Image (cartoon, rainbow, N blue to C red):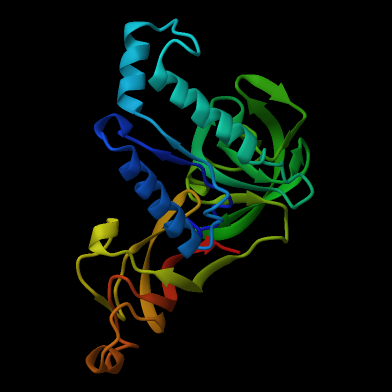
Length: 272
């Protein structure tokens, strides 16, 4: 979470109903806070709420009109959401940055043209302004001739909106999911990039085995997934250092390792 930029966390310790010893629950909370500290989150300050999601759900199923104070487990969910509201800052719309929208879907509307839909990541966009279609194919410039959100016509859209953008002179075959719409001149497509990576272990839901230079996984970037080839890497930290491991350190990455790697994509993608 820290590596991908998650700024704030609220913890919910589930299945409290299955714990008979209150001291055990305190020990689990302490361990969670220590883990948060380990990954550079403020473990002492982060709210930790205990409860039972299943029992809360069952109570709501039996009585959908249940109110705060009527059920212990439902109250725990109220407490969780109160902590989220108070501890997690309200996201600010980045309207002062250049426009960027990752295309999620493309529609062809008879008599009107091609519409690209997606969530505006940042900036603002007005009807009549130019945008560039970046990624996967050659960059193309077009004009916005319409904006629509939830069947309402807009003159302007801004960061945070889920919007449909009508594009002049663009065929459906010219644009696809994974491309981005951006302010002209602000974004370039790249087919090669460097990345800092932590290789998840089997216990963390990751790999069971090491991989070598030449490995070709899928890379998920905004709304696209594209095949890339690992052409080089260097270790930052090895999970299990040894003379044999160090000998192969620039050829093989083990689960639990942290590496810097260089990737060659089969198609160019809009990357910053």
